[in-house]
Amino acid sequence: MKRRLTILTQWYPPEQAPFGRMMHELASDLARRDWDVTVITGFPNHPRGEVFGGYRKRWLLEELDADASVQRVWLATSTNRGLLARLATFATFTLTSAWRFLRRPRADVVFAVLQPLSVGVTLPVIAWLKRSKLVFNLQDLHPDTQVRLGMIRNPWLIASLRAVEHFAYRHCAALTVICEPFRTHAVNCGAPEERVHVVPNWVDTARIRPGPDGGEIRRAAGLDDGQFVALWAGTLGFVSGAGVVLEAAQLLRDDRHVRFLIVGDGPIRTQLIERARELGLDNVAFLPFQPEDRLVAVQTAGDVSIVTLAREFAESSVPSKVLAYMAAGRGVVAAVDQHSPTAKLLHDAACGVVVEPDDARALADALRGLAHDTNRVRKLGACARVHAVRYLSREAAVDHYDRLLSELAAQR
Image (cartoon, rainbow, N blue to C red; front, side):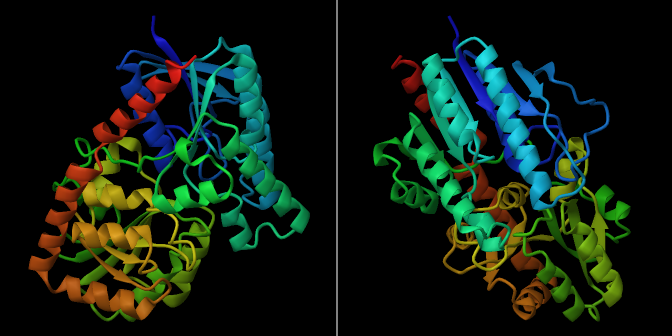
């Protein structure tokens, strides 16, 4: 008899959120490893808050995707990305996903992304009622991120959210985290040390690989093949620190060889486009998120790729975009803290240049140097690809998860 696994994630394809894609890959790979997989998720609306074409919200929609059953539950959505609207989305997904868990047959293991944080209250209770082993996956530190951004300031609310966080860490059979700083944080918050497992995020190196595919994206953005293109791709959120890219572009506006391409969407995209227009930056091009089948084309559109994070947000984890950049064989220029996991990864792989976050001058100097050093650009890209294939593969991560989940399933 197949072992039954339920995966909970608010984000899932066709949304482009990187860890949503990873949950899709995990579901499909485990389904081929003798797991009966069900995914409970919401209706696709990230990052604009608009439900994707082809979908109409209802209480429940069942699909079959890559050998896994996908069950989409109703959640509140809004194009207003303010705090109250986001809280409404999180709260409704927490409630409707809990309803669906209660209605479904018992799963041997429940694997849930701990976001929104409110599932940290509902899922331990439901897993206990159904005698399922619960595994939480930590992709970000909540509520720390919102507190640092100033989005949550009420002391009572902060204390309540921290209590939920600690409760979730203590009341799961296992907690998987994506980097050592997250492990330290979880243990300090009361998670039993023996239950915390570091499983880094991964990239599909068989799918994302070096190649000439990016020409179509360049042309769509009005860029020439002979220009040196620095690519920034991903969600344009409040912690992205993407504004420094425009500042660097302003410093390089007289170098006609260097161009910037920003591909993505999110709450600050309109603000960045307006700022680029105000500054007259004709060396910056914007494109929205591209369809899934153009992912490789996007990742290979730049000669080098850029990752930025707002100061104080770089020390926790490695943005998923970095893994995709490396799989595509592109060197990375990172405006992050020198002691962050991202900086360590790039140094270990010998595939990037690290400058301080928010330092536009340093970012511009790094890009100017690479734009006129073809050999170094080629070497950084080759090292990035080798490291991604050797250490960041999808197969290795899924092997780790398969072993952990199998051990838990056998304990019932």
